[in-house]
Length: 135
Image 1: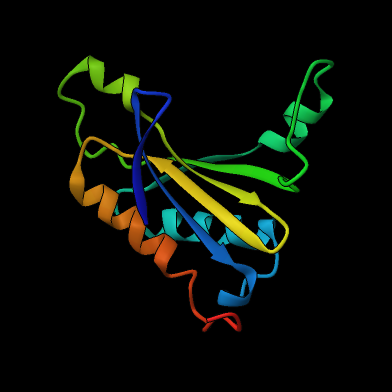
Image 2 (image 1 turned 180 degrees about the horizontal axis):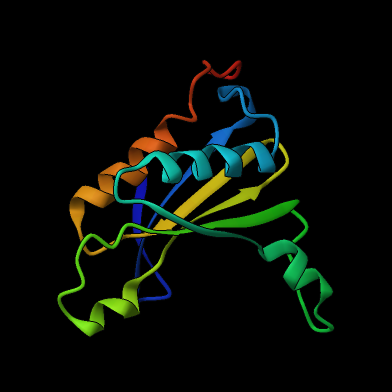
């Protein structure tokens, strides 16, 4: 998983998973996988699924690069504590999934709690359940 700063300010994690490396065949199956993970996490609260591709596609001035075939965000919150109202600025969480044709591109912004970063990473690594035919 790659760690970077997007647009000079957002700490994000990204990974590309070839479709040959997972048993999940499409974007909806990947999103369902994450929804299930959130619903079964003891502190997880599933909020919704946002179809970013459909939203952008319907905008008069919306632009989507041709490599992206679909893009959705699974929106959720862990929120085990609310000790400062500023915490609302970094909640809720989401995992973005883009269908790039032969692979899925997954990304999330790092939460302020390292343990939750590890949870989200483990969910993503759990998608890689097949050896790539290209490796």
